[in-house]
Image (cartoon, rainbow over all chains, first blue to last red; front, top):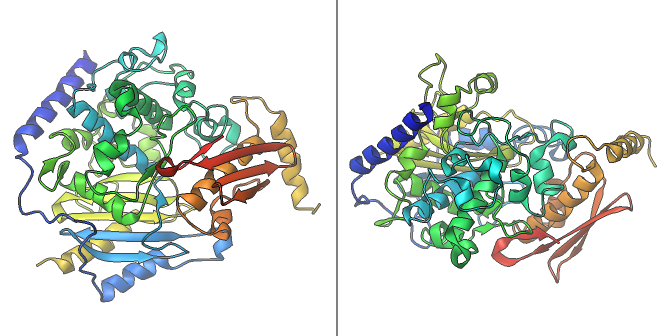
Length: 382
Length: 97
C-alpha cells in the first residue's frame, strides 16, 4: 500500500508539474553551433582559478584537487571557462556516473514516446528472470531494485566490488545479464541502494522497450542530436548495451548543453525534448529513498539526496540536517560522477556548471565551488 | 625485480588464487581495465600516451599496453600471462574484444 501511495504521489507530482509548466519558454537564449561567450574577469575569477586549478603535490602522485576543465553557463552564455593538465576545449572527458543522469533523460524520452512507463515491470521489456519481475522501471530509476550489489571502487579489494566485476571482470561481456544474475537482496521498491547495476539494467530495459529499430541509436536520436551535443560518445558492452552507469563522453561545453536542457525543464529551442514533468519528477527525493528511509549511510557520508538518477540539495523532511550544498539554493540539482565529474544545475540562478576532473582524493569542496560560481553569477547579473 | 615490486607481486599471486565473491583476480581486472580505458583515453578523449598512462594507472600497476594507432586498438598484458584487447568503434567509443 505504501508503495502504491508513493507511486500515486509520483504520478500526481508529474501531473502537477505538467500543469505548472507552460509550453517551452520564449525568450530563452539557446546556443546554436556553439555557446555565446561573455567571459568574466576580476577577483572572483582569480579566486575560482586559484581554488579549482592549483595543484598540490606532484602531479604523478595524484594528490589534492585535479581539475581538468570547468565551464560555467550563466543566462545562456559561457561566463567562465578554464582547462588544465593537458585538456582543452575540444577534448571529450569521461563523465563516469554523470552518465546516469543522461540515461535518465533518455528513459524520459522513451516514456514520452509511449515505449514504456515507470510502472512497467522490467520483465515487460527485458528477460531478467522471474525473480526480478516485481522490479519496475521506476525502481531502477530510484536505485531501489533491491538487487544484491556492492558499489565499491578502488578503496576495497577489487574482487568484492560488483561494479568492477561488471565493468572489467566476469560481467563485462553482458553487463545487464550479470546484474540480473545477482538476484534480490531486498524487496523491490522498498529501499534505496546506489547501484551502477540498476542503471545498466535500466539501459537494457530501455533498449528492449524501444526495439531493434531504435536500440542502437537512441542516445543520439533522443538527446545528443536534438541539443547539439556533437562531441558525445556513449560506450556499449560486448552485448551492445549502453553502459549507462559510466561511459558517456563529451566536451564540457556539450555537457553544459545537457545541463541547460534540464535547467529549462527538458525544452530546447522551443521543442519539448524530455517530456513535461519529467525533470520535476526526477528532481524530488526518490520514492524508494523515502519509503525505505535509507538514511543511515546518507547521513554518515554526507551524500546529496537521491532523486531519480539526479542528486538534490533538498532537506529530508524527517531529518534535521544541513542541505548537501548549503551555499547553493535548494532547487540546485546535480549529476555526480567518480573522480570529481559534476554537472550542477541551479534554476533559480539560471546557472549550469560543468566540472571534469581527475580527483583521486576526496578533498574537493563542492560547496566552495558553488559559492564561487554563485558569486560570479551575481556579479554577472544585469 | 625491485624490493618495491615484490610485495605487489605477492599480493597479486594471492589475489589470483582468491575466488571469493567474484571470479576475477586483480591481474585479470587490471589488464582488462588497462585495455579498455587506455583505448578510450587515446581515441575518445584524445589525450597523449603519457597522459593516458597516468589516467589509467591503477594499483597494482602491473598491466602494460601496446597501441595500434592505425587500427585504433589496444592490447594489454600483465605478468606475461593475462591479456586483454579493446578496440575503438566510432561514436560508440571503445569496447573489449
